[in-house]
Length: 430
Image 1 (cartoon, rainbow, N blue to C red):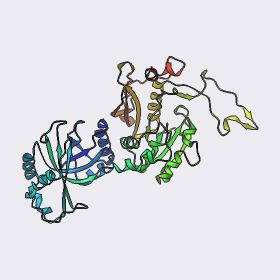
Image 2 (cartoon, helix red, strand yellow):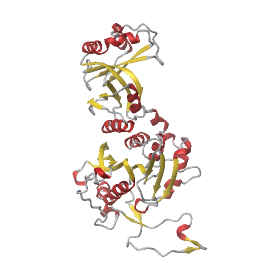
Image 3 (cartoon, helix red, strand yellow):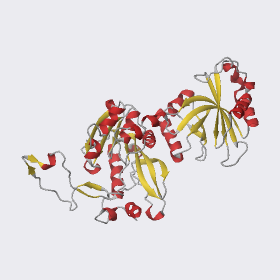
Image 4 (cartoon, rainbow, N blue to C red):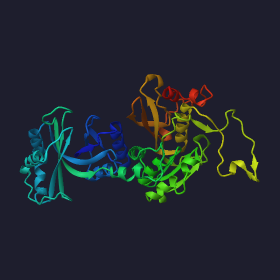
């Protein structure tokens, strides 16, 4: 199959390959990595066609573009030999086509004169068509990779024919600085879109966020065509405090109301959603319980509460009613999410969930597992003293599930308050 060079962004490195693999699965395209490293933005893959390349890259957030590989080498001399060997038979096809060259140097820099000299080195290609810096029929890019902080010549060079740009324009479109309704816990646009890609949001799918907050993940899923529904234990975060705010305002801002199903007030353990496997995707960033401690609907003693009538109306039906809440174990919450995903996702449906993991071994939180869910990818975003993971699971068809694997849900943890029930919270507060 043809070889392509993928020009990635050099950030969120552990997310890039997982995103590309998910998009290839979504497009039904066979893609193999011939070369990939988190230390470089250049990856080499095989794909069946330019159309397949466009299908994957056009919505990739962590990719700048994809190019058909025309040649590679450790210096420009070996690059020219590679280009001649691989593509000489195709030069005549572009003899009269409009064309342009560009130079992309990673960890290095070339001035305008040096770039022109590099481009002049490819005169042997014999292109006689007009040069067009915009909308050229053929766009060839010279890629150079330098050693960091080491002056001199590049250590790797490539020549690629442009096929498609990545989907990074969406990051600007959904920038939180321009969004009408956000909070301190809103996921930034870039990572929300990547999460939606890993969960394979697409037209005709229903996506659910059980911790919807200000709707960052719902908006991202809707951007890719999915119908979005969400819930949150705090209705104030859904509605917003001011007129014209709230999650709905964000959907209106981006013209996505046709993909907004609804939001409702609920926690995951008391959801009113109809039981059954009808969700195509679940994406969420569960609360870590650091500032306020995790809570779930209910009373600490496990009992009920007598209904109260106020001015002829049941108190729990009045506007502004705040139901009682009790402390919740972080580990139990993770298991509740996995169990919910198992019961609600269709075959091959995906659940993408963020969770913290400290760099300190004393508070390392094990990746949760369930016999019905296959762990597809683990992506890590490091911070100063801790990090967090984005875990993506695939709901396996029942025929693939190993029935011999036992699974015990962690429903009871030792402790009665937020600190006792959440080791991660204890460590952060210390």
